[in-house]
Image (cartoon, rainbow, N blue to C red):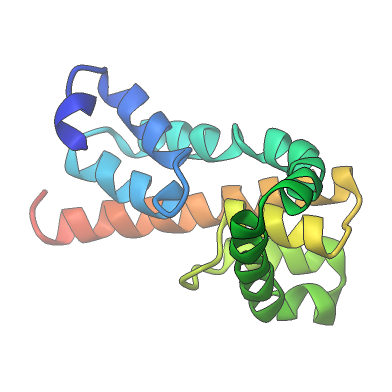
Length: 160
């Protein structure tokens, strides 16, 4: 995958990687450090790339899910598994309320949490749109600051 990304400027590589599911911010920022992007640029493009899919995901996920439920049993099984994972990992949402819960869900780096999972959790828990957008965005910024700082100092520690 990285070979074809090499054709693009480093900033766009990080932006693209941060917007991909499973890689997201937590993979893009260390990647930015590895390819020599300065701290502030890696952080900025990582956060922007991770924030870009949030509004479309929150806006279109529920209508798309309802349609796919009616049309395809295969997608119904897939989204049921995604829903179970979101509900299982959504303890902070239930415990602290929608806004704080989604923020913590994204900000605290635990495997399986991030902006994509938070969007799915927000849809499943029926969190109001602007509460979800603001909470996930703030969590993304905090997570980005944490990962950029860690990546920067780990690279510095190992002479990078």
